[in-house]
Image (cartoon, rainbow, N blue to C red; front, side):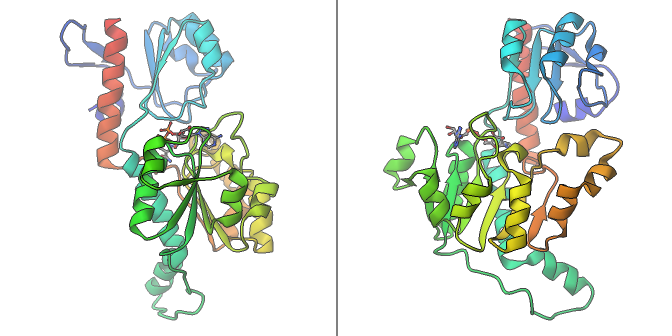
Length: 319
Ligand code: NAD
C-alpha cells in the first residue's frame, strides 16, 4: 500500500498500470516547507498531507525544483495556495471522499465521551474509585444538534445523529436537495447557534469560515452547549472558546484539530507549544477533550486514501 510505501525510506516502484509507466517513490521524513522543498529537486510530483505548508514561497521553490503535480493525501486543501499553484501550472489532486463515515464516527466518539464523561470515569476507575459524583451526564436522545457543513462527512454525522433520535439543524451555503427531501432542516447560522445544544463543524477552512466560532457566535449558543470540531483548527478562535469555558457558557468542547497543530506535529519545540498559553489553558478544563487529528485514522480509511492517491498519481503520470 502507499502508506507502507511511504513509511519506507527506500525508493520503490508501484506496479505498472496499463499504458502508464511505473511510479517510483522516495520517502522523506520531513514536513514540506519552504526550507525542505529543495529535497524535491528532480522529482515530477510530491505527495503531501494536511500539515505540509504549500504556501507561495514553497510552491515557487517546488516549481524551480521541477515539480509539476501535488498529490494531497487528504480531503482539505486549505494548506495549498491554489492560485499560485495554478499560476505555476502545478496541478493539485486530493482525496475528497475517503470514508466520510470514519471522521463522522470520531465526531460521535467525541460527543459521546464528553456527554457521559467516559474519559474522566476511566481514569477514576483505574485508581479504584467508583464514585459517580461529578460524572452526571446528559442523554443525547431528543437534543438539538447543529451541523455546519452538510458535505460528505456532515451528511454521515446527520444520519448517525438521526439514529440517536436527535433533532438536527443544518447550515450550508449550498443546501443539499436530497437531504431536504429526507426532512433535514436548514436554517441560518444565527438560528442554528441559538437553538443547538451541540454544534459540530464539518465545513472546509476558507476565508469565509475562518474563526466562524468566535465571541459573538458563542454568545448565541445556549448556556452549557457543546462545541465539536473535527474539521480544521482555524474554524475556531481558541481565545473566545477559553473565555466561554471559563464563564461556563460553553459546557463541553471536543477538538480533533487545533490551529497550531502543524507546529505541534513537526516542531522540535512541540513541548513549548503545548506549554503555550492557549493550548495549555484548553487542556486544563476537565470538560475539554482533545485528540491529535486522528479523525481519519482507521485501517479502512488509510487503505482508501492510499488507493485513491495512487489513482491520482497514475492519472497525472499518464497525462
Ligand atoms: P465536503 O467538501 O464534502 O463538504 C464540505 C461542505 O461544507 C460542503 O457542503 C460546502 O458547501 C460546505 N461549506 C463550505 N463553506 C462553508 C461555510 N462557510 N459554512 C458552512 N458550510 C460550508 O467535505 P467533507 O469531506 O465533508 O470534509 C469536511 C471537512 O472535514 C474538510 O474540509 C476537512 O477540513 C475535514 N476533515 C477532517 C479530517 C480529520 O481527520 N479530522 C479528515 C477529513 C476531512
